[in-house]
Image (cartoon, rainbow, N blue to C red):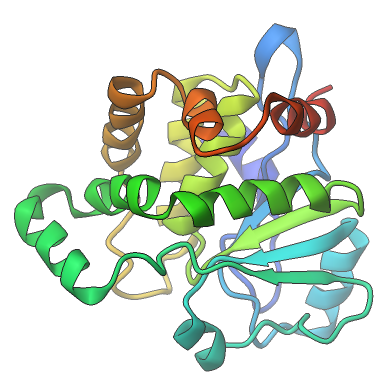
Length: 234
């Protein structure tokens, strides 16, 4: 495994796939900061030491990207923490079972990339809310976003943030692909082969040009993009 990726990993007792988005080369010779953005799987059943360490990282905003049913099944342990602003945004709310069924039947060989493209197209309002919440969260401290295993909805969010910071595509793909190593204990996660994200990025290039332009077209202003990059890059 790439040693740089391993350094970004934050081992916890009862949480998995928890890591920083810091340490990547970005635009203009800058580097993404540690302590700004974190990604992970679910945050249920954490040990006291886990909770202490997460707060010690400076995380003051948690964005839960899961469905309502998933949040009921495994509620976040920080829901009632007065030091943490907790935001729930179901980024797949617009993708009902019928739409998902048609999607998977139409492109069975590339199910995950089809899912990511569907989220970009069908869940534009939810994606917009995520990015706006990220920007607002930066005023309070570090921002952690997560879904169930921290790979798909979380991976799409990480791709957008790394992209607007000018991180190289190969680093973005590596950040996505390493999830497969960190979630071995979770069954039925369908892997995280880089081809899934490559096809998603090709979709963005074909229809929008760049991830930043996609975000502009769904209503994210240059001011918000600049704010995120200003805090994320050093």
